[in-house]
Length: 389
Image (cartoon, rainbow, N blue to C red; front, side, top):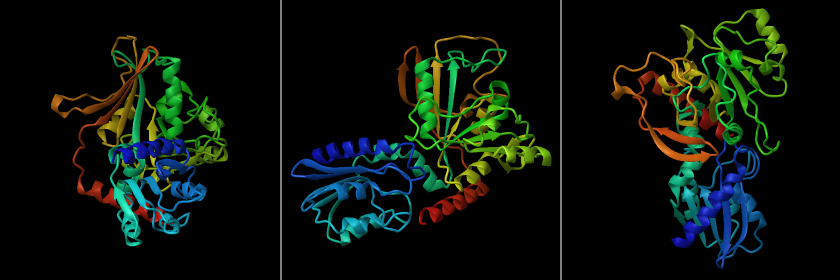
């Protein structure tokens, strides 16, 4: 048991090397051990390319009586690559140790059953919680059909995201800003509101990280009235960075100008200028977007929280005070009853020079109505159907 945990931890660490490149697939690491020594290893490096087990076993010279450690249940279906279980069967392995089952119904339990039927000694559930957390976006995407959503914000100690004139450069220090670039690279899409674009004219791209080490995230602008300026940095760089603008209404001339700049237009129904964000998430899921980082102002933050789409919150807190009643991290009317607040659980708290990086998860979910459940199930089934191709 102790040795199994030791090697599984190494496989989990190895899986991290694929972060930023494998989505919407999961992060997976695999290690081949013989006579107490690692003889080969591999990880899933890029979406559409061989899985971790394939890389590891292809490098192993003699696998007879060896043990294969793999963080996620091997696939048993043909998709973009052949079934991993078929290749595993060609080796005379003694043990197969699997960290976590795969939540995808076309794999879940079937990969393990197939390997057991082939005569292998299979052990499961090693560091399963750690692996699920490592693949939190994949597990949410597969089980709900919707992307995993993280809200990120840099705030002062008194909860402000800008001064009373709307300027926010820079609340946090250079170490915190470097961590934000890593967050961007780790997500499939970055979402912001038109208010942020008009105030800051951001690029919303990934900087100071080696090109090719991540898949550039799509940029998503929530813009109900199609106010996005044609001379904004977002529009000017749309030919280089995939960009979608979500609108409620747009004139034919504005639409033509944006499309000429290679901006994709997505139209949704807005209620008093507010979109149903779950509909946008379902739309993005069909584009294989499994994770979204929201970097926005108080209004979009409030909409995301009140509509129950947030899975994770990351705050960078600077030891500064601004005061006043303007530019809070979350807008809206506030709650009359503290018992109805959006409760979070602390996960990690790290010091980045003078700032704090605090990661939290929602403590509980609001009950969804039957229409929301039906929408989620349809989205989930669409994701599963695409993953089998």
